[in-house]
Length: 328
Image 1 (cartoon, one colour):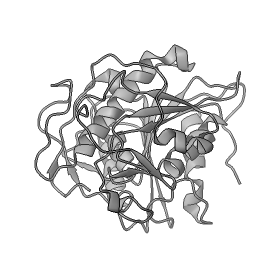
Image 2 (cartoon, helix red, strand yellow; image 1 turned 60 degrees about the vertical axis):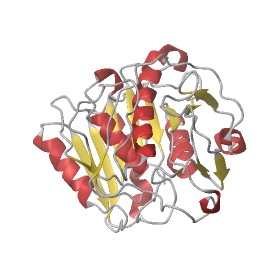
Image 3 (cartoon, one colour; image 1 turned 90 degrees about the vertical axis):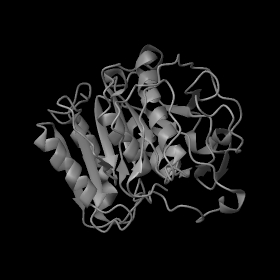
Image 4 (tube, helix red, strand yellow; image 1 turned 90 degrees about the horizontal axis):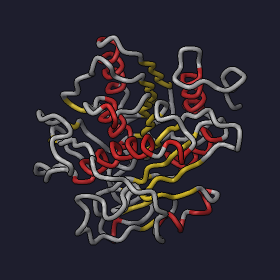
């Protein structure tokens, strides 16, 4: 959990990125949820800054704890159905765990079925003691306060510096992994059968915080072409660049963990900078509505996201027909 006013340093990964398959890990225990989707290493060796990590990655239910080896799980469209676009998806979990299915695999499958390559980023998390690794324990998904960005510019160093006191190391590393993921997909675009100019990023809660940091990154190679942030906190001191990517925001009005106000402020920031932004505040759904069906209006956020992506002014063009119809 990140306390209000904590300092966060952002850096750009500039090391060479590998594409070898990952050895056995929590990914394997959740293989039944991925349907054989390819799992790739984000880094060719140990993740920079995690060389001495001792925690053991473990999956409990549909959540993953103690991540030290980031991966990309690739859900590809059927042959001949790809739009060429890709969306990197970052689950939430308060930087302590990852809600990898509802805020990862399920969204990636939905997009892949509609011609968009969905790539789930399993980013690094804070270490969690064994007695906290159980369903319902630990930090509530997305329990984040405001997070302060540093005065220094991103990209000053190849690895994340030691964080200030009371700052989540996982938050530093998650942003570094997000930046590296965008660079990876662009570098390996031909292998992934996607366009390096249609790489989006979609994050939930803690993952949405990562998405917002990427949206304002100063390094163009690490900035997504379009960004989605679902029930996101707002980084303090965030400055929207004049070329910020199109932004989609969604939150429930009854979200008691993050609240709707940060999304509204971010929307206003984007519009004040003359940039494209769309905001959906659903009447109900609470925090963490993800891809679940609760019989609430937030159930259809992903349909609105797809309409936004594929509308006449959207970032993604579906082949031979208009936007897909919303699911019932």
